[in-house]
Length: 151
Image (cartoon, rainbow, N blue to C red; front, side):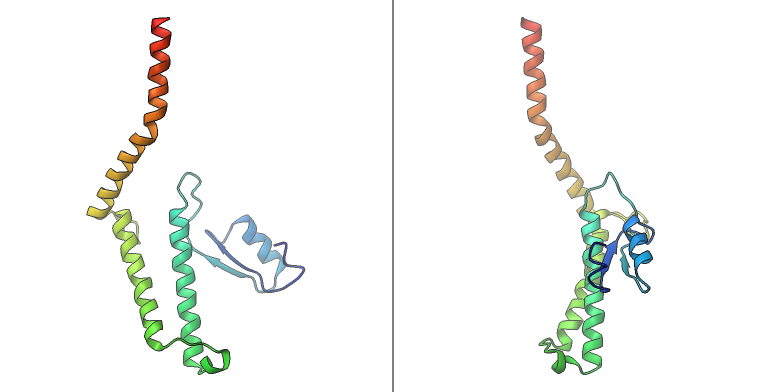
């Protein structure tokens, strides 16, 4: 938003269309360049979902751009060095990314729960890590209780 006085080419990736920064961008430009991941506001969630959604969105934009440059025979003019096989590989990676995220989260893209060994394994590993993180405060608490009980 601070760049609007300097250039009309301001792009924004946001979780929703109706965010505060999105409103400001739409108010300041006749044709706002706002890309939405549609993951919603998640105040208590790690940013991994936001990162994955943004990565997928930007990958899809890159595939679209690569196809348009390739289809319009502009590749020599703009100096691109990729081939159609590169575009197909990137498309495959984008598709596999969604499938991998479904496997990791244990839900489909439509938020339907699915049985996933990967999700169960990751949750078990997270519980183990949580035990390690809580080990030191628990040791402090037990030491303090011991001191209080013996003094």
